[in-house]
Length: 364
Ligand SMILES: C[S@@+](CC[C@H](N)C(=O)[O-])C[C@H]1O[C@@H](n2cnc3c(N)ncnc32)[C@H](O)[C@@H]1O
Image (cartoon, rainbow, N blue to C red; front, side, top):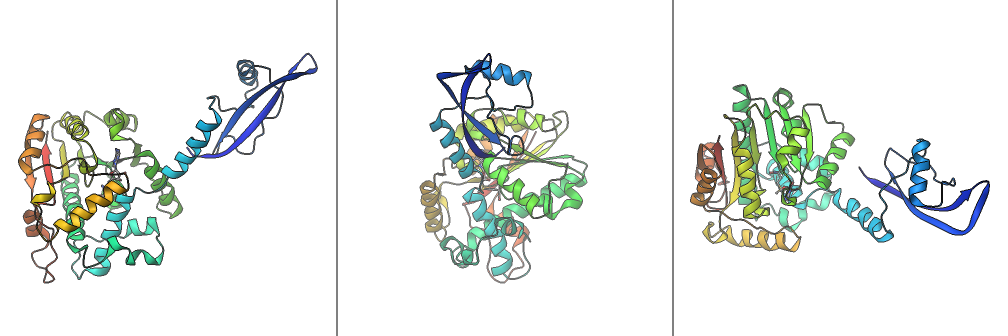
């Protein structure tokens, strides 16, 4: 819900046919998009706030936003809402790298995904951004398209075996629902992400005519806020008695180890036959020397933009965590595994770097 307008309403107490002088009740009436737009709040309602609300209860056509905020709180809420309804910068970057793969890399493309570029609609200058340099970003781009393709193949394979629920944690500008509707529409697809970026994505999908079909559910959650995303998922129609595939790409590094462990625990407790596929970042000093400066820059950039890398795992650590949190089996999918699957026939040398971002696949 977006705050669109603030009306400062000054009300004068009114009783027995007379305006009372010398007593003013000032309330902030915050109008909500689609609910109260254009409606004034100008009639005398009583000389205390409680009395005003009682009057309004009797006259339901006077709709007021009942939670009183101080001026300062309201101002900052409006500012936060405006600021938050925007794409997450990390999600935007990887979506643009997926688009750059189509523009800058030769055929065959590992993944054809320009939907994020369409949603973001950046100005022409995006290709000249430092973090879009076609040469410098090559290995990172390869890693991003490899992880997305791996996940997509896994989902398609599981859907073919009859699995009906697909949960995308930290979905960002994931576009499986838009690119593969022939498969996605036979599933229930749940996209979980921070409320603001998700509201932005929903709005853009509608503006561009993709729409939000009933089989695609948006579930706004902040993983760090301490609540249970599984509760939110169930409210959105997830069936806990049935297995699901849960994926998380490019998210674990932005969460604390505690939040990652909590997420793994929640997925491990899903119905038997469920699968988690999650990427994790290895400690930077283990990465291939040619990508280490890029990763270090990414680490600095992430910190500077307020989304620092918080968690790194070695493959044995992530496998141990998967077992500790209750998964029946777990395997590590390395960069060489991805290279073997998707990059072997290439002549341009494009491939994901070793020991940077790799995958955990675990089953309940
Ligand atoms: C690098 S993007 C990856 C997006 C998408 N998975 C992909 O691979 O294109 C990281 C995503 O994690 C989400 N995210 C980061 N911290 C989060 C949190 N605390 N709660 C919910 N989502 C979060 C961001 O909003 C963003 O969409």
